[in-house]
Each structure stands twice: as structure tokens, then as C-alpha cells.
Image (tube, rainbow, N blue to C red; front, side):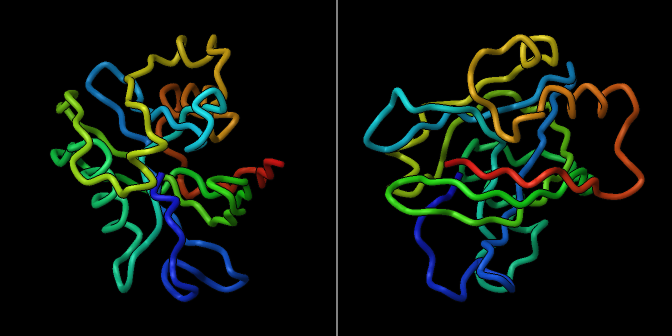
Length: 175
């Protein structure tokens, strides 16, 4: 979740939103990979989320998606597909508020072993691991998952394939 404080211009766009690329990574069995995160000083305040993070410097969102995926999971053998969804979100994390413009890319891989290879100091304190989820497991989950409609979105993706163009999700504001 690369939620390290960034210099004002880095990873930001108009309106002060942090530009973020996330990956909806599916394996050959259509399982989705989610990371297990928590507040750095309170492991009980936890959630699941897709790999990804902020765009750095001049890189494209596609480059950011692949870089973040490699850093957070060690997975580099991927076919990056289209942008599925876009969402704006705002949430408290590590003592500050994060306002983000997130793009979710579809990706496929046959590489299912994960190993975080380049976590930031903040990520080392706040990411507890990764897990592959089936769509039914995700639908039954009692844990917090972001985006909050991920089980429904994944079911639609698996049933209908990628949308013709990116779908704009509802803005999520976590207090």
C-alpha cells in the first residue's frame, strides 16, 4: 500500500490527490491476490487490499502498477491488462489523511508464490502478508476489504469479462 508521505509534487495531481495504480491480480484459478494491512501502531485495526501504490516521478500508472506489484509481492511474471475501475478515496493511515485517485488494472499471472522484496519502512510496519482469495471466499469474508464492493466487482469481472472502459466506482471516505 505504499502510503509513505510524499513530497507535495510527487504522486500528486490536480486537487492534491495522490495518483495511485492498483492491480487486480488473478491466478489461473481466478483467485485474486490481496495484501493484509493494518495501522502501524494497532495491528487489530486491519483490512485487505489490492497491491499497488503511488506513481513516482515521471513513471506512468502502468509502470507504477508493475513496480508496486514486484515490490510488494515479488511477482514479475504478469500480463497487465486494461484499467477496470477508477475510484477516489480518502482515509486515515499512519497519523495522516490520504486522498487518492486510484486506477485498478487487471493482471494475470501463473506465479502464485509471493515474497515482498522491497517494502518501505512504513510498509514493513503495516503489511502482514498476502493471500489468494476465491470469489466465494471474498463474498463470505467478514474482514474489511477495499474497495468495499470488491467481491461484487470481482464476480462481475469473472462473469462478464473486463468492461469496455474503466468503471468509476463510488468515492469512499473512511473516517
